[in-house]
Amino acid sequence: MTQRYVYRTTVTIGDTNLLQNMYFANHFKLTGVARELWVRDHVPEALEAMRQGLILITREATCLYHRDFYLYDPVRVELWVENMRQASADMRFALYHDVTNELHAEAKQTIVFAGPDHKICHIPESFRLASAQFTNAATQ
Image (cartoon, rainbow, N blue to C red; front, side, top):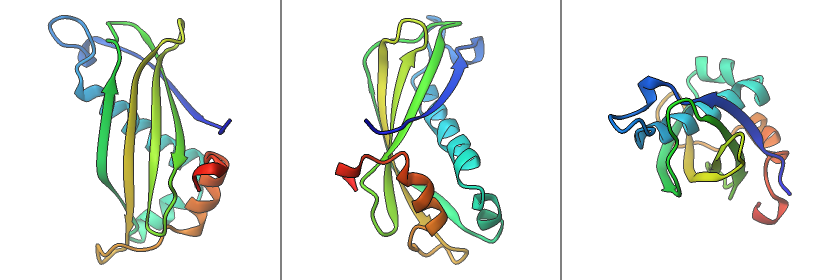
């Protein structure tokens, strides 16, 4: 099985709607936070590369909802990488209730890399190396 990056959080009042379930857009927010923290934790050169103009663009984002999260539910977001290409990769996410381990949502982001000129560029080697431990060899 592919190694997964894990991000944990708790649903707060600001994440919910009037019915006290987590507002649908916050699933996308959680996957974005998990992605950015994965970059911070596993691509040490990323901050300097971004300061020099490297851009990570979300080309596509989808989420399949299975069940709601409610106020104060503990959430576990698991991330792994699939379909690494020359200039883009698919990042997959599974959102679980962190106590019951029930799958609440599945998400995918396709990210594209661009340079300071905003033109699409190849994925930097540092990102490829970091992704290798979170990529299923069958999907490379």
